[in-house]
Structure formats: C-alpha cells, structure tokens
Image 1: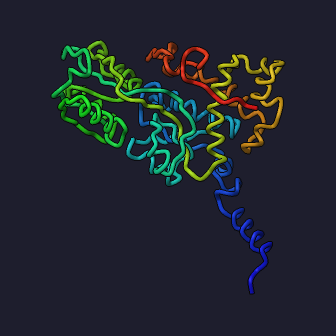
Image 2: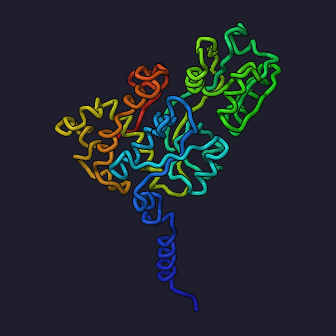
Image 3: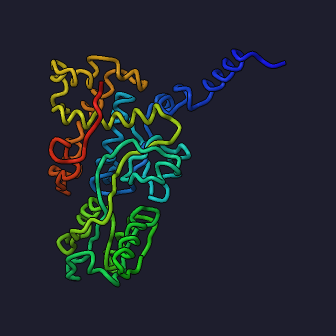
Length: 341
C-alpha cells in the first residue's frame, strides 16, 4: 500500500526535526548553555593574540573575542575554557567537538572553508606573511634571501606561501620545518636558520621575546593575504550566526561610538541603529536564539572592536601595531560590518 503524500511529508518533516542540525536544542548553543562554559581553541602562545601569563590568565585579541561570545551567550565573559592548540591540532579539535569555537590566528582560505568541515565567520584581523632576519645579515628586502635557510611552522598556510614566493621569484632556499611554534622560534634564535617567516603581526610579537629585539629586523615585504578569523564546525547555522554577529556587533559598535565605558549611557540614545544594536528596539536576539541584550553584554564586558585591538596589539600594547587595514572602512581600512536591522 502506497502512503498518502500528506503522510510522507509529515514523516519527512518529523525526521528533519529529529536531526541535530535541524533542531536548535541539539546544537552547539544548547551544549554551551548546558555546560555553562564556552570551550575556545586558541594558540599555545603568541603575544597580542593568545598567550597565558605565569598564573594561567589568557590575554590577546583572539582571547578577547572568545570572551565576547561567552558574554553574548552566557552573559559572563569569564565563562570560557581556553584550549591551547598547535597548528596541526586545531582543525581536528574543532571537527571532533573538543572545542566550540576556534579563535586562533587562522587564515580563511577556500579549502579550509569548503573541505575541512569548518565555517569561517568573519575576519578578526587582516594580516599578511613576512620575514624576520638578524640585523647583522644586512638584508633589506626579501628578494635578497636567495640561498637562505628559513624556519617555518608546518601545518600552516605559511609553509605553502614561502614555497610559492621563492618559486615565483626564481630563488633557492632551504626550509627548516617544525611542528610547534616555540620550536620554530627557538631554532631561529639559536641560529639554525637565517630567516623566520610568519604573519607580520606574529613576527612583531615574537621579536619582543628574543632578548635584544633591536638585533632583529622585520623586512618590509608582505608576500600574502592572511585574513585571520574565527571558525566553527559546519552544519550548525545557528551557532555560526551567533559567532558571526558578535564580531559584526563589535565592529558596528566602534563605528557608532559605543564602547564599554559609555554603553549604559548609549541606552538613552535616540539613534535607531544604536537602539537596535543594544537590544532596546526590535527582537534581533531571538533570531539567533539569544536574549536581546546579547550585544550589550559583549560590549559592556569586553568592549568594541577598537578597544580590543588597541589594548592587545595597538598603541596600548607592547606591539604598538598601527590599525592599517584593520581600521574601520570610514577611516580607510577594511573593517566593515553589515547593519543590524
């Protein structure tokens, strides 16, 4: 006997609702709420992005973003467990469910976004790959590095980029490859290679750890595009939307002049863009499964994008990196977020 079309449709709909990807209650958001803690994968230690102090307290731009998501979801930026991961470990940790969110200076590429079981949710930091050498080598530009030995971390886009650069420019080089970043840095510092290559922001951070930083020079050449951003597992659209819109809210807040210092006063604003962002108008939180004060919580407890940038990698930090490409679009940079409306 052939079942009626109506029965088939009802049965199919019920099956869809029973699947984890279709039901919000079975997704990452509910798991985080049930646990009462966000589990965030970060770098094992890179100044300005994610690094623990001697008491185990984590700081950095990637770390602050994790705290922003926790504030939006759990109303407490402190409810984060940080899991330090090597470049080789990070994707497996996300795919297996060991972590809820990967916020680990990870470059957004096509293969990673389509074939690695992960979804990128935006660009937290626009970067590019460069080279650092000891000043006594008297090298002024990357094209003078023919025949050099280059320390590079495996399992990164860095490894492929440096191979492409030397090949494209007809230069020879000797790769000296390590799995972990501390090993790579130690080898460069010990003179086992002539050059250390990584993202430019990372080079400036590493330079501060090498004793006399003035003995090392970051060359002016930038050889790649490295859009660094947070990523989540594929198949959970709700969780991806939450992480994506937390980032967008922080960028929009800076543009609107909302900071951790004035967010309470901004609740009295008559600007509809500000009122929607802070949850006083509309019900945009419901669309992603959160309360309407989701953005307010993140901004009050962590701050807007500019605040995060300045204290971790900008003028308020030891790195003192200029905003450059990471300035707002209104200031000549690339940081631009869709509106909340």
